[in-house]
Length: 174
View 1: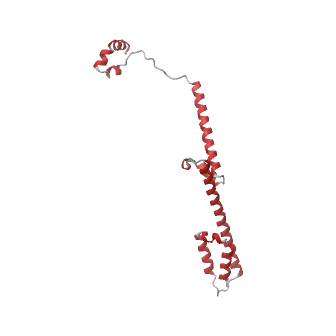
View 2 (view 1 turned 135 degrees about the vertical axis):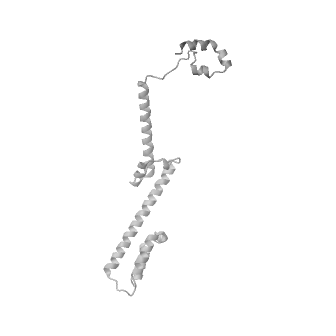
View 3 (view 1 turned 120 degrees about the vertical axis):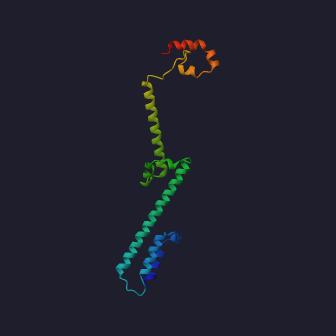
């Protein structure tokens, strides 16, 4: 008799379309419960009600996890719709933490992109500020003179063509 009651409760509490989607672990739990209650055993009402309460708790947890998975799936679908070129692999841990805390993925992604934009603007402003206080670029004056290394690297023809400038350069070498 208790087997029939458990089966009736299991079947009547679960929506018909969700019966096939019950996680394997939950199915095992139900099987163990129904096997533990044999028709010829004298089962106390407390044991049975405790098991039924646990079954209800497990069902509630399964439904909560399903809803969470559905919310995440919808959130990531929205993210890909709004940001088709989003590279989730390049997102920092703060993105994942925000999603775990319940922030929709699209909102967490937009926040991270805004943070990157602000950081880039601040870096550019700092660069410009440093550029203003800089002494400027170092420029070399090409006076037409050669260094000893430049002369050593010349071919005979280049030496003949630049002989006058080479002689002037040699006077300044130390």
